[in-house]
Length: 256
Image (cartoon, rainbow, N blue to C red; front, top):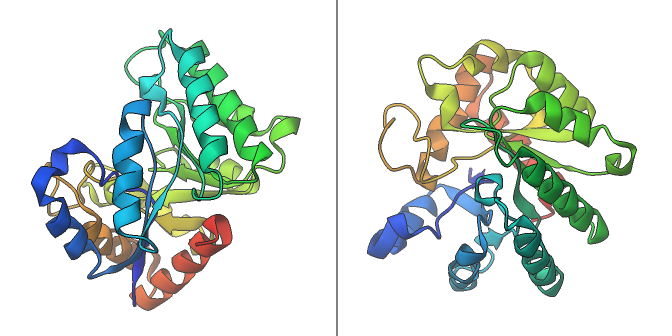
């Protein structure tokens, strides 16, 4: 049985010269891994790494909301050109979204950039990987817009409540569940058994959000096993069933 990590940033400098060891460990348990882009500066390293591990690492393109500022129109115009150039080699648009966890200074710029990237995703018929940490109600309102009716994707690192989870699922989106689920103080452990496994995909969000018992340490894709086992325990299902269904969900969404 092999896992699929649908959200891992293996291209980030934090892995340094250790990246080969990190990927080798990951490939012991992961059949495939999806790498969402963050900013214009990360694109070259992202594609270089994916080229080295073809059929194992799959690239996505987008601008993370935390990198959106007053220069957002330039950023989006640049990423749009690159997305169209690379459309056949990417499995989705991401990671994109909204994040006002620290402040709302650039919320309207984030929203404008998000809407534009959603439109690009529709234009090239690709799913989206959405980052949202604090703005689930605003996110749902955007996804409910008539022009977004046929969008598909995942809300990665889902941390909302059960009502928000159900609304996102009704809109046709999967929930990306990662190491956050294993934290002692995380409310997700109280609602995950109420979410159908047919609506869940697995992720690590490496190098962030290491699952217990590695919380606070640098995360890596190998740790996907701890996420899957936590879901299996909380849903009272076999680990094989969790893997089989979540892998099928990934194929249905990303076609990899």
